[in-house]
Structure formats: structure tokens, C-alpha cells
Image (tube, rainbow, N blue to C red; front, side, top):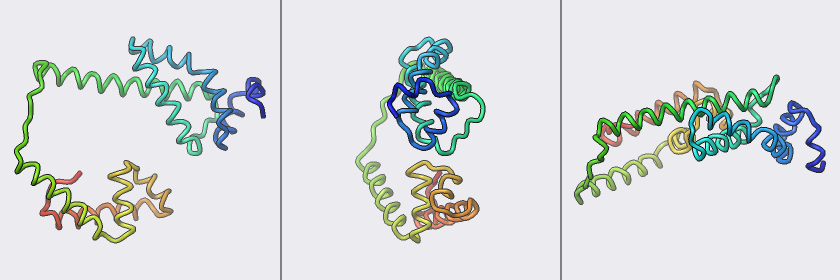
Length: 188
């Protein structure tokens, strides 16, 4: 279907095509709404670069999660809500940054590390990776999905085709084994 044909398709039908992986349909949605979404973000932030980044992040996220996102009403309303959510998160982060800058007196102290601190960190990293390889395969994969790839419990369960409780158990057991092996260093 030529790109020009998408101009006359209703948004909800375009979204269904997007869910099927149609890049041209997504491009049409982008062209229809990016400017209004940019204006929405800019109106809250008065920062063109940040507003542009937020709109891009929303579109990238929606494309990546297109199979999971079900939009039954208005596609543009969903996009606007996503932009507003991102703007709020951005403002919260900015507020926290400003607060810490004020507390720090606008200066950040220079931190130096001794050679022994670097060596200790390298030893800890090596021990961590060694112990990680000793975990059972499935437990290690779940742990890496969580910690290195930042996947949620639900995303891991879906990816690995296991229950969320199994994911929780695998993570808990992995943390116990790693803490025991590493001398109970703090691990998030």
C-alpha cells in the first residue's frame, strides 16, 4: 500500500496496522501528530530540545511496545497522555536535580580513588562475574534479564514463558546465592 493511501485511513485502523508491524502506517501517525505533541510538551517545559526528546521517546516506546498497547478509543489521546506522563517525569527529575544542586552549593566535589580502591572494585567485579556464571542457566538468564536488561518481572515471564512467581523465585534465589558467595555485599 503506497504511503499516500494511509492519509485517508482512520487512526484506529492505522494503529491496528502498526500493531502488525507496518512502519508506513506508523509514519503516517507520526506525521499527523508529532507537531501537536511537540507543542504539548513545549507548553509545559519551554525547552525545545527537551520537548523534542520527549516526543521522540514516546514514539519509540509506542513502536517498541506496539504489540502490547491496545488503543480502543483515540490514538492521539493515548499519545498525548504518554507525552504528559513523560513531561511529568522529566519535571520531577529536573526538580530533584535542582534541589541537589542547591544543596551542593552549585559545586560538585572532586572525588579521587586510590589504586587500592580500583583494585578492590576490579576484584569485586571479577568475583561477581565468576559467581554469576556458577548460577544455574535459567536462573542466570532471569537474573541478567532483570539486572542487565532492565526487564520487569512480567516482561521476563512473558519472554521466558514462565510464571511471574517463578521469575520472583529465580531472582530471590539468585540474589541469595550471590550475596552468600560475595560476602553479603549490598546488591540491588
